[in-house]
Image 1 (cartoon, one colour):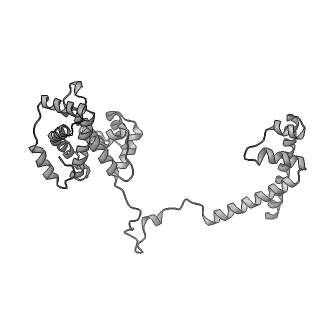
Image 2: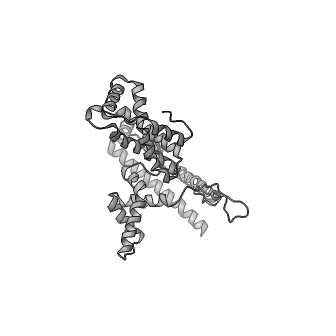
Amino acid sequence: MPLDTSNDMSMSRQAMKAELLDAETELRLAYAWRDERDEQALHRLITAYMRLAISMAAKFKRYGAPMNDLIQEAGLGLMKAADKFDPDRGVRFSTYAVWWIKASIQDYVMRNWSMVRTGSTSSQKSLFFNMRRVQARLEREAASDGIALDRHQLHEKIASEIGVPLRDVEMMDGRLAGSDFSLNAVQAADEDGREWIDALEDDGDQAAETVEHRHDTEQLREWLLTAMQRLNSRERFIVRERKLRDVPRTLESLGQELGLSKERIRQLEAAAFQKMRKSLEAQSREVQDLLA
């Protein structure tokens, strides 16, 4: 049966006219497809159970997806089931196919529910398709007992009932609470036709912050150059090789080049840093005195 027709009523009528397979015929067709890749056997098997796929697709109409799309997804699930079905296990094909059909439809519904992916784990899928039903039942039971549940208590009971983490319940409740909203939609109360995206705060660096950061960076660079100039040539060489190279050199390699021990290189490095620290502190005090 073709799955690309635009008329789901026509597909339903065709499915209802398809043959009903007995267990022996179903087994023979399954073997023909598995062992011989007989496409006619596959087509006959799928056609016979397309009514099952359509029936399951109809149960998901409440999620707002077009019925024809649901039927096509159900058909894809049915074909996956036929491709993976093992007739040696002694299970009827219809029993095996139900899981694949349902999984295919659920994946489609969740993919198209929102532009933001709703969830893909088993607990998130269980919540998506069961949360509202379980919530309504829990609220009815609480009301009949004269109990008023707050949102947190309700979430805890849902998590316990479905067997999922509380954080997943809280996340899914937020996702199911509203639909997607375009940031390019015009604000109804705005006479100038401003879009919602114009009201979002820019979290990037502002002009003043950029200028201030550039000024501070240039100031620090000047201070470091001045501090480096107050070192002797050997100290500048050690600092440059130890701190300004992409791959800093080891104390041992510098000692071998300068004819000094590793410990002596460490002492010279520490002394150079002390000189630079004093120079930076002095320059900082000069700036503070000027601003005072």
